[in-house]
Length: 405
Image 1 (cartoon, rainbow, N blue to C red):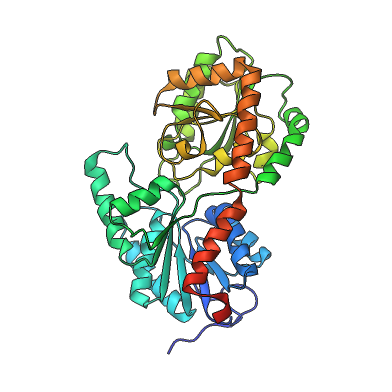
Image 2 (image 1 turned 90 degrees about the vertical axis):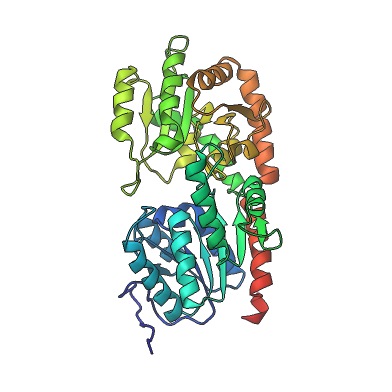
């Protein structure tokens, strides 16, 4: 019989950590460390404080150290981000071994590839309970049917290995039931949330942030996210180029970058567009940073022209800071942004429409302020992370009451 490895200074073997922990263990699995650090850590700490014995597993990276320093044990694993790879067979075997050795009672999976491999491994390892948070199904309304149908069928198959599905958007929750991915009884619309007051308070940094970025009174449009095509960066650059005629002082602030594991890195494409459109003096980039709220405070308008989203946190962060939002009319975005009230929704891949709405907000300070205030109120009412944590805990209590631990 395999035994756990007891060690006090981090992992010595993939997926086996020490010192020996009491059972039952609740393990959250994602693909990359940034998901652990920026999306999952607050809810893991909440579950831990509620009495659950939690740990996290994902590819190694700086985010895992942050989690361990916060008191969440880390179980290392290697997961390729490709949808199809022979290495996935090895990963499933290693994950199944990890689940058995660490006596995992609840496996909670996140992100598409990790969610698929984790559920297969849990089926192999006979893990008692499997939860899945859909941060936005990989299939969506704008895909060709030939691409969408196989993904739906895959989700339906994996749904048979899932005890409870959490969806971040109500639209995904309804889709899961309609496509028989999960039943209404075995699914919960979890929502998405942020520390609203943290971002609301960061608005006070505006003067300092703008000074650090070399800004005075220029209008600033901000985008937070990864440099991949599906985030709509090309349309954003085109929209800003259209606006430069009437607003020569306009600046585009991009908070983010590309991950080494991104399947579609776009730095070269972005750089070529910036040069072609003459935006060298317009663009300001911060790269990946832990000071999103600080830099976001420099903005006047927030834009997210994505092709596909789940329930984007970046919009919620902007709303919490009192910024009006211009976003594409897609799943998740339309659940957060109320068109004409907290911002505007525009058609997909439509740079002229994007430019029109951004320009309208730049020109009208009163409308910016009105929409920003409405968005902040909406964020406080609906998207406080504590509401999400409470919904999550109620489901955990159904499957594994703290009193029974």
